[in-house]
Amino acid sequence: MTYQAAFSRPVTVRLMLSVRFLGGCPMLAIGNDEIEKAPKLGNFILCSICGKRHKVEYGEEVLPDGTKKPSKLLAFYKCGEKNYLAGINGKDIRKI
Ligand SMILES: [Zn+2]
Image (cartoon, rainbow, N blue to C red; front, top):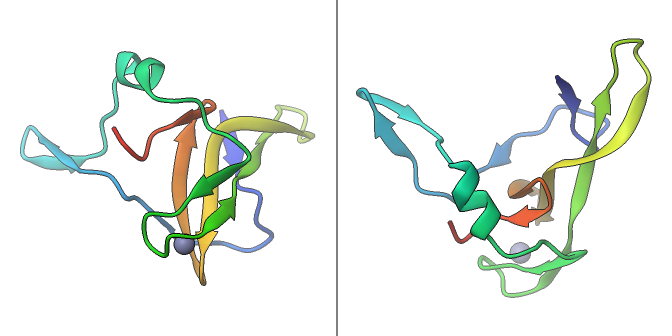
């Protein structure tokens, strides 16, 4: 699936997650069961960096014919000038 973030220009998304080493390679690995257990993501999140509330933004799925439709697969939030990954499939993954 092609996925396009909700930003008009390329952005760097920072992961506030622990990175596991699988087979000697650093990989971001989150199991389906972990995502299922994660709390539901709301429209705003309380930022662990600055302590303020930030709006949760989503991207779009690019369909085979090139059209786009809103998707909640990946959720982001912006703190200052930086973007952070907040959720997957509507779940708050920041505390996994
Ligand atoms: Zn913040």
